[in-house]
Structure formats: C-alpha cells, structure tokens
Length: 206
Image (cartoon, rainbow, N blue to C red; front, side):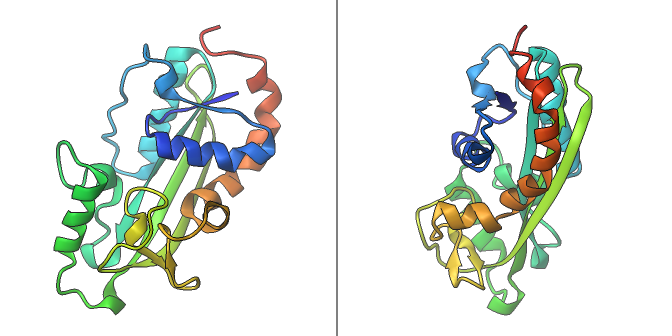
C-alpha cells in the first residue's frame, strides 16, 4: 500500500486506477486526518510534488507519492500553471476556474489556443527524502464550449486533436494511456516497482 498526498477524490481514483494493474493499492491522504495541509507555494510543479510527498511522509512515517499537475496555456504565457486548481482565487471550483479560463481566452482564435497538461510525481521515503521523480505532459487545444462529463478540472475544454474529443469525452481506459498523468506514471512505475519490497514492509504510523 502507498499513500497519495492528495485530498482530491477524483485524482486519487484516477491514480488508483493507473496503479491497479501493478498490484499497488493507493490510499488518499484524507484517510489520515491527523496529517495537516501542505502549503503549495512552490514555483514549479516539481517543487509542489516534492512538498506533497515529503511532508506527509514525515508525519506518517510512511512512503508517500506527491503529485502536482495543471494546465499550461501558451497564449496565457503558461498560466494557470501551478495555480491551476486555484486559478479563480479563494474558494475556486472547477466551474469558476473554467469560467476564468474562457474569459482570459476570449478573442483568442482557435489555432492559438494550444495548451498542455503537465504532471510531476515524487516519491518520498518515511524520512521525507525524495527517492524517485517523473514527469509527463500531454498537448491539446482549449475549445470554447465544454464537451463531456468525464474527468475533472479543465478536462471538458481540453481537446485531444488526434481523437477529436476532449478529456471529458474520452473513456478512462483511453485517458489512462495518453494523459499527462498516465505518461508521468509510465515513467515512474518501473522505479516504484523496484522499491515495493521496502514500501510493503511498513504501514503508515508504524
């Protein structure tokens, strides 16, 4: 069993689905209410992923995966970037973030709405040391109207041109092969499997 340093239920479920074929059980950090919130004040996805791995790992005395991801829009100079989850400010929701994204892209022609989803993963050991990292990205286009109810975040607006569908429309089995998170975990899993014997010898809090 491995702990994921995220309280986002949809993200936790997606990571669990990606790791399930490897026989690795994933438990979200929300299962451990004694662990405090991590302040995501890093300037990069890698910095935030490392914090979301190391701080809970120290608190639990267990291996923790930290993951930070977001949307990078070329016409917006890379925003929302590390602020993707809170793009619209305090109390941000998927709906308010997407509304702000549409407002900022108003007047930008379709061909200039290129973007990428970016994901960075870090694995911390029980002492909080980062033992493994990986990153992945997926290119797409931001469309003007939402399509599909799958996924979360900006998924209904993120069009994969090769499939002519958004992440909100693609079935999970396809998304788990081509998404930024899937690609990051594809690079991450070989190293993780080598560490599984060490991870499985320890339960959180022991």
